[in-house]
Image (cartoon, rainbow, N blue to C red; front, side, top):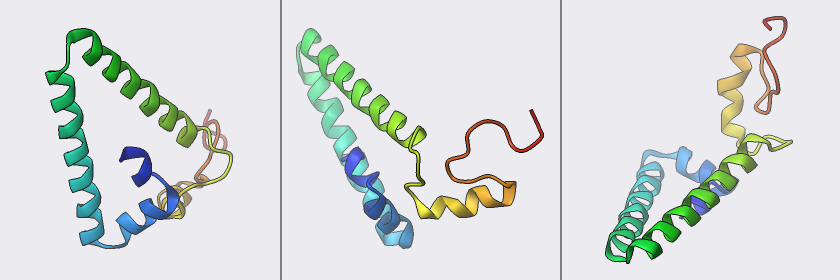
Length: 97
């Protein structure tokens, strides 16, 4: 569910209206509750394996978003341009470091 909402089209949809945003939040909450219920009901080794797999795939998503060579979310242009940065800025802002 987390990966699905981070697809550029789904992310843009979620930011387009309050209802869509709360739909995203609700589905993420329900999926998180489902994950934790299954982890807590599992044997210790299985629970640990599920949590490890979850950490790995979340880390992979974070790495893909962090190191993307092109901006994935047009919405973020408005958060970076006032600072003189592009959405995929690498390094420090011009002249500050």
